[in-house]
Length: 258
Image (cartoon, rainbow, N blue to C red; front, side, top):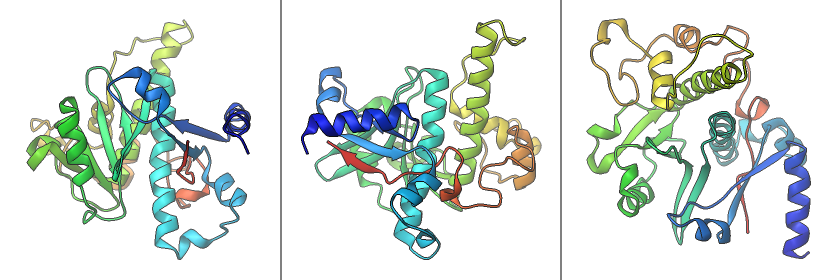
């Protein structure tokens, strides 16, 4: 099958909101267009059905890792659409960083992992090549401790998965409200707030309100309270009653499309 045919089929799937692709990050625009893209399904349930995975993610750590990465990708993709910020991945030979949120003032880079023991060498090399991401790059893992990137050696911090998802969800809601306000459909202007403000909204400890950190607070709030502060009700908090592959903004195969 020719590359042109593959591109055409992918465009059909993207227009049907079944998949999306991310270009490879580069400091030069023309280079971004030539380098390989990464493919994600918008919805994890569609991904599992299309690839006939069934309940494999429940017993296969590798499958669950793919779904977790793409759960975050789906959430960031939704935020990128509302905020008009470009989203990328980065790969250079053996180095790879999963997600690059290219905010013009406060860019962010994320490596999604199943454990905090995951290697961060690729993140460090990415920061060395693109210094604007220093202090703005994070390893993300379930049940991870919170370590601000500004306090970490080499400018690479650690984020717990649930905190990042709550922050992205809160910020997406604010960006959507801002667009409604601009179109005259909603009252109350909203300023431009990067993801870190979403973290503060979803993860604020009153006892530490004066101890502002770049991405929120190290104190872990009660999950129900975090969800309420982030704007989620009991019925629509992310991940409640289902795994990463069960729908929502969803997960994907995360393969490359070159």
